[in-house]
Amino acid sequence: MQTSDQLKQIVKEKYSEIALQSKETNQTSCCGSGCCSPTDAIPFAEDYSSLAGYTEEADLGLGCGLPTQFAQIKPGDTVIDLGSGAGNDSFVARAETGAAGKVIGVDITEAMIAKARLNADKLGYNNVEFRLGDIENLPVADNLADVVVSNCVLNLVPDKKRAFSETFRVLKPGGHFSISDVVIKGELPETLKQEAEMYAGCVSGAINKEEYLDIVKETGFVNIQVQKEKLIRLPDETLLNYISGEELKSFKESGTGIYSITLYAEKPQIQFEKTGLQEAETLAADTTCGCDAGCCK
Image (cartoon, rainbow, N blue to C red; front, side, top):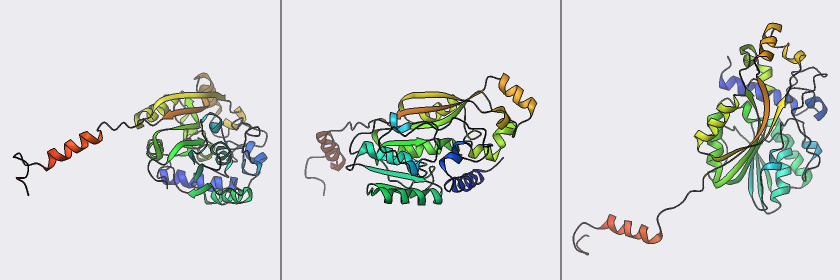
């Protein structure tokens, strides 16, 4: 089994290749990984073309949902896009937040960051920024974002608990996320879990849906809602590249399903219980010595 660092290196290498491929090539592969044959088009990505801010050059066909469509972004918001790729979701978010807002895209792949920055320069956007960084250790200050979005990326992160903890950290109190991702209902065959190519293809890196939701809840998020859910059907020909015919038969009989979901959750609004008067009283209590006023120096 690969280590966390090895899995991240697999993702970097695969998505560096993807950054140089066309959208058409990526759409005929498992989430853009190039692991499937050209005839095995898998319906992961959804059509962005009708959304404001859509930029064809930034659309590599890598997503598994439309998180920005559900993200309730308001004018002036600060938005962070986790795993921003060539910038597609960031530019759609920018259309929602407007010139008064700010969008920060974070990606672990240098080639994707370079491509996203080039696209932003061509569009003349001065309020969209792309930072090279790890989702498990975001290069973003605490309590900065009103909204976090992400599209088919968290499943690629080895430590999902850490990733959601970082998401919680960078959101403002009362802020929220809308994340599209791949989850499993049931149990994947063990050999499929171990396949590096299927990991980069957004499948073997996915975890059980209930475990995913539990991680979000345990992180401290509230008002958790599945905004959209869609079954993803992998062709038998694709699966047979990684598992045996007997394993495929057992897999199909087990009722296991691979789904894309779009998930919403909020960071609780922190309530400050002490009023200014209470704070003053507490300070006074802390600085007295138990005798009449003026006895302490």
